[in-house]
Amino acid sequence: MTPSGATPPRWRQQGAALLLAMLTVTLVATLAAAAAWQQWRSIEIEMAERQRSQASWILTGALDWSRLILREDARGNRNSGNADHLAEPWAMPLEESRLSTFLAADRNNNADDVMEAFLSGRIMDLQGRLNFRNLLAAAGSGKAPTLSPSDMAAFRRLYASLNLPVEELEAAVQLLLASMRQAEEDAKPSPSPLMPQRFEQLSWLGISPESLRVLTPHVTLLPANTRVNLNTASAEVLAATLEGVETGLARQLVAQREATPFTSLDDVRRYLPESLQEAVNSERHDVRSQYFEIHGRLRLGDTVIEEKSVVVRSGLQVSVRWRQRSSRLDRPPGRISGQARQ
Image 1 (cartoon, rainbow, N blue to C red):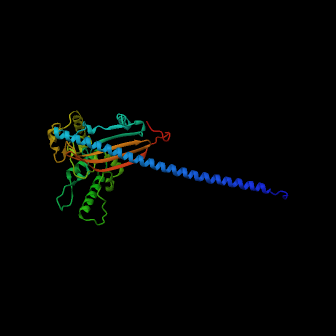
Image 2: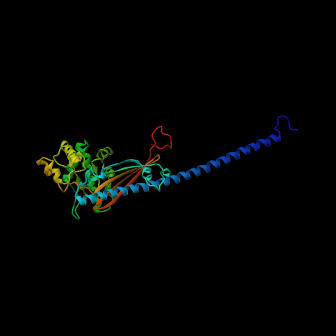
Image 3: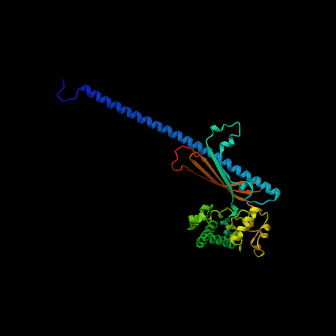
């Protein structure tokens, strides 16, 4: 007999067993969820590594393909003496294309088993822009670098045509000279910024991001002094590098070379008034190029991987100076996660 109002022992035992069963189920569910999460994480890491490896191989192949195009173009130029211009195969951009369409042409490949990948890219002539390094005049051994007056004048004209502050340019040039002198003298600590190696690093010299954005189609930074290719330069660059040539006349030169590319500097002089023909200088201008920038873009599902490379062509040799790669997610608003954009 149990006292009035007391819980029978059998009920207490049943309650304890039920509580123990619930705790056991909770523990098992927690362990199972942790194991599932670990498995999912391992699969995601393996897939990401596989995707990264595939992207690296595809972009490397695209870079080698671009180098081959530039090499064959150099072979043709050497045989025929033609100049580099925007009507050549290397200047034709590759629009976004599904890689599986190329593999489907090979009977040994099954395109259905290939991850959906889309490749696009283009080759750009860097010598169609003003080279910021040209502002440093070539100095003899043991001599400090000096400013190139002709190139500084060209940059001033470009800044004026683009409505950018010339004061910013002059301050950047002074910092550039200080950086160059410090690099040649010794390695002691100095308030001068490091010597920029790429165009984006010109911000170290105080050039604002907005100015860099506006200058991107017209200015570059190369490892050596170069000449401007008048076949690929924009109208703004032509007006800046050809003293006395106004923007209207520069646009006429662009229209003329689209119809008939310049094969020599004499062709350029032929379309200029006699008073301006001396503006074309063989020391600062050319119709051939050595430095090119290769852009590659690969889309794998939601991931977009972009690569930018700078190559230099010397004869039939096309070597890579540097490569830069970045990736991001491409998920438009309202899109179902995991659904590939077509």
